[in-house]
Image (cartoon, rainbow, N blue to C red; front, side, top):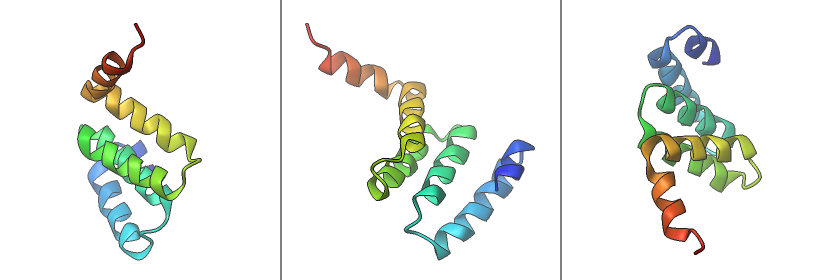
Length: 88
């Protein structure tokens, strides 16, 4: 799937990952890769959900945490949360 993504074939990558996901839904790396592909094609909100699911399955999955943070920043949500929780 990564090779398709590398060559700009995100849709093929997505199809391959979805097929893998059906067989291995409890594998955090599959959720993570789905998040990466959705982020690459501009589905920021969907990518956040996929990265979060990877984190739920593997709480120490730092790459998924970084992906989620990047998605949040790109969607503008990260900025809102920082403003809400910023200490005065």
